[in-house]
Image 1 (cartoon, rainbow, N blue to C red):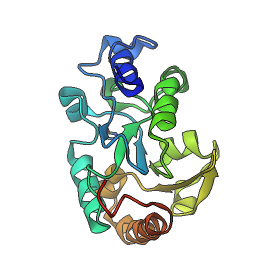
Image 2: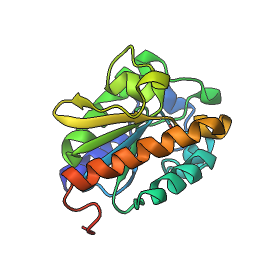
Image 3: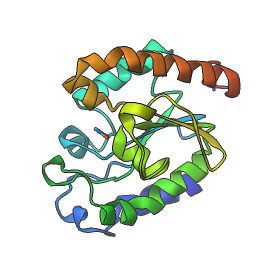
Image 4: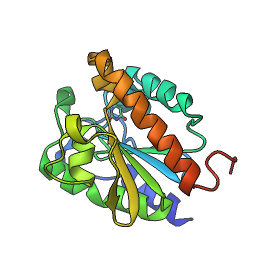
Length: 191
Ligand code: URA
């Protein structure tokens, strides 16, 4: 078995925090594990818990539309979450749950080795970029995270709640597209 398959099967059996008791499925991630661009959300919602796939609910449909605006789709990116199991009632994941889950994401990042990471929303940006990240002020800015270019954009669920944020997100996505053209070799060329 490959390292990726090993990681996947270990993660599917995870009981490192109490969320395993209420989950229907572990949501490991979706897309191309050889991608140069990785998107990281917060954690699965109801549809994701039901299907085991990342970002398949309403927010996921909007994410697909956002990706297609800049020529991306799930065949040339990878999407994972900080927390792999649904929280009861979709509450924010506790710090202890994020910590318990962190080794899975760390290893996913290590194996995928993306050139660019895009944090979807505040929770992901706080976790990956810095604890005091302010999404309203710092979305669309580039940060260095362990030698990778990292940007946060508004979470698609936030854009569904507040469509006035969409024009700013479009600007952020164009910045992302530019960075991909600058530093990724395969994303727009087919892999
Ligand atoms: N929201 C997230 O942050 N992740 C998902 O997989 C779905 C919705």
